Image 1 (cartoon, rainbow, N blue to C red):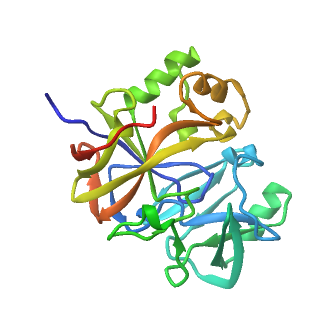
Image 2 (image 1 turned 120 degrees about the horizontal axis):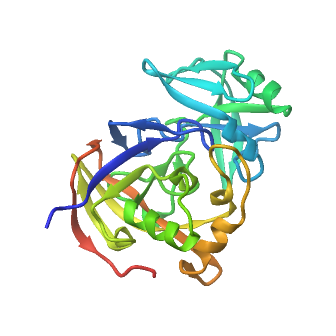
Length: 274
């Protein structure tokens, strides 16, 4: 029997904005390099996502050399975001229960976003000098921190899992609703929930916990329209207590490189939540 393998790799350079698909990527202690290293925050430092601003789907990103081109699909305005931008002041921001010391990106990009969104916002970048620690029980020898991801550094899911959700939803949908970093082919539906320790490419991961989902999955990534039926469909067969789950969150044990086509080698398993 053939092993499961990586079919897609996706990063979200700016939290809650558009995806960038890759053929290969380095993995460091914060997850896929380039993933969620930037984030928009309000004037008071509160993180901003599609939960409260579903219109953030208007911003598409693509590679521009080693940097990113941000395109506002509503106005066709665009900006280049450097992977290593000029940085401004240190600021304190809030992401869920975490208070994080970060730096604002200089060069006027905060003002650009503010004008387009009709709200005073700042674009900030996470800093290695002020890491965002993860819970001790999820820490590994290779990672004790995360990016601006909601919780842990990497989110993965299998194609079969998406297809099972589509069956219950009654229609196909854009898989980017769930904002996974690694999509797996050749695995059974929700098989990834039982992967405790596994390797892919030169990387080894710890399958830390299932991902609890919120109303963000109701946002159509192409239009920004909100349809509550997605979370409702998922809750009918993926609910435990008062939470609904889809996808497995993972933490790097050994950093390295992964690529589309890399096989998944599962070394240890656990009981799945569902």
